[in-house]
Image (cartoon, rainbow, N blue to C red; front, top):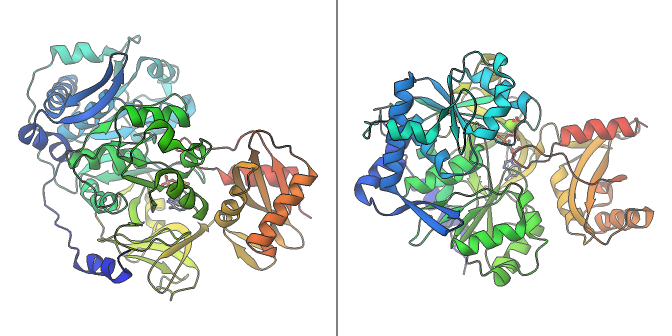
Amino acid sequence: MLPDVQGYDALVRDFRWNMPARYNIAEACCDRWAAATPDAPALIRCRDAGVQAVSFRTLRQRADKLANALQALGVTRGDRVGILLPQCVEAAEAHLAVYKLGAVAIPLFTLFGPDALAYRLADSGAKALIGTAEELGTVQAIADQVPDLRHWIAVHGDAPGAHGYEALLTRARDRFETADTAADEPAVVIYTSGTTGNPKGALHAHRVLLGHLPGVEFPHEMFPKPGDRFWTPADWAWIGGLLDVLLPALAHGVPVVAHRFAKFDPEQALALMAATEVRNTFMPPTALKMLRQVDRPAERFGVRLRSIGSGGETLGAELLDWGRDAFGLTINEFYGQTECNLVVGNCAGQMAVRPGAMGRPIPGHTVAVLDADGHPLPPGQEGRVAIRAPDPVMFLEYLNKPEATRAKFTGDWLLTGDTATTDQDGYLWFVGRDDDVITSAGYRIGPGEVEDCLGAHPAVAMVAVVGVPDELRGQRIKAFIVLNPGHDAGDTLTCALQDHVKTRLAAHEYPREIAYVPALPLTATGKIKRKDLRERGADACPAG
Ligand code: ATP
Ligand code: MG
C-alpha cells in the first residue's frame, strides 16, 4: 500500500538543513571516502578489457596530482577552468582538482561547436581548459576570441600548444591539501540550456551539492541503498548530469558509471546498464522516449534498476505508465532549473504519485505559485513558479549579467519563468514555460499535455507543440511530429491525430496544423527548442 500524503508531510515538516560554514565539494566527494573506504569503487568504466573500477584512493591520487599540476601552471583560488570532456574518469578528476584548488569549474559540452565554446569561454574568462585533443582543436580555431585562456591541457591524445594530461600528472607532486573553502564560496558555473535564448552562466557555491542531496534522495527512492550504482546518459556538463548524478552519488560513496555514447542509442544504453549492473538512472524524457521504442527492455537486456528519475521537461502520464510496464518501477519526475535545481519531485515509496503532476516540494525547499504581484495563489490558480530564498541550491548570480540576476527575483522569491498550478495537497502541475504557454481563443494551453496525448498515438515517435499567430484566435496550436517507421504522413493521418486529441484531451486543444518533420530542434541537453519551432511555424504559415 502506498504511504499517504500525510507521511510525506511529516518528512517536509521535520526537515532541517545542516549547513556547515566551511565545505568543499572535493572533500565531500573524494577525500573523505579515500580516507574511510579507499578500495571502494568510485567510478566504473568500460574498456575493451571489460568493466573496470577506479577506487576512491586512485581518484584522490590523480585529482591531487592534477591540482598540483594546475597550481604549478599558476591556476589559483577563484580562477576559472574549462572542462570540455564527455562522461569519463578524467572529467571527474578535473572537477575534483578544480574544487580542491578553490578554483571554479566551467563544464562545457563536447557537442558544442566553435561559437558556443567561444561564447562560454569568453564570458567566464576561463584561464585554463582541460579537453579532449579533438575538442581543443575546435577551440584553437577561435583562440583570438578567448584572450584570457592561457593553458590548454589535452586528454586522450596530443594537441598543438597543449600540455599532455598524463604527462602533467606524471610530473606532478602527489599530495594536495584541499582548500578550506567557505560553503558559500564559488565552485562552478553552469550555463543554462539556452532553450529560450542566449545561455546564462549560473554561478554556484560549494554548498550547492549539499542542497541537491534531498532532491536526489527522494526521487531515487531513499537513495542511497546498499548496492546502488548510478549511470546517466545526461552529460556531466549539464546540471542534470553533474549535480543530479555524478557529485551526489560520489558524496554518498556510491559508484558512478563513466560512459558516454557518441549518440544516445537505446539498445546500447540498455546493454551498458546490464553489463555494469546499474541500479539507478536519471534519464530525461527525450531519452526515455527513445528507450520506449525498444520492446521489453528490462527483460531482453537483463537490466535490474531500482530507481529511475526524470526531469528537465514534462514526463507525462504516458511515459509513467510505460515505465511501470517496462521496468516495474515508477519513474519519479522532478523539477528544477540550472539556477535552482531539484526543488520539486516525486518519491513513489513515500507518497502517491499523481500522473501528470511534477510532484511536491522536496523537503528543505519552499516552492509556491505566485500572482503577478508576488503573492502566493490558492490551489487551482495558474501562476508563476517561485522558490523562496535563501535556499542552498540557489545560484549566487549570473556571470556578468547583474540586470538579469536582479530580474530573476521578486522580494524573497526566485522566479523560475515557469507557469504551474498547485492542487489541494500541494502537488505542482506544470503548465509551461512562460513563453511556451499557448493562448488560443481565450484558453491557456500548456504544450506538455497536448504533446503527451499525441505521443501516445502509435504513429508518433517525437512531438513538439507550439502556438503560432492566428488572426482569429490569437494563437493556434501547431504540432511538429516525427513519425515512427511504417507510418505515412498525409491528410488521413493528420485527421486521425486531430481526432485522437479531440476525443482524449479536449476539443479546443487539438492541433489545427500538423507538420511532419525528420527531427526536432534540441538543445545540447536534449530539450525541445520550441522557440525555434515557433519562429519556423510562424514563417511557414503567416497569421490568419
Ligand atoms: P534557458 O534558461 O537558457 O532558456 P533552460 O531553462 O531550458 O534554458 P535549464 O535550466 O536546463 O535551462 O532548464 C530548466 C527548465 O526546464 C525549467 O525552468 C523548466 O522550464 C524545465 N523543466 C525542468 N524540469 C521540468 C519538469 N519536470 N517538467 C517540465 N519542465 C521542466
Ligand atoms: Mg531557464
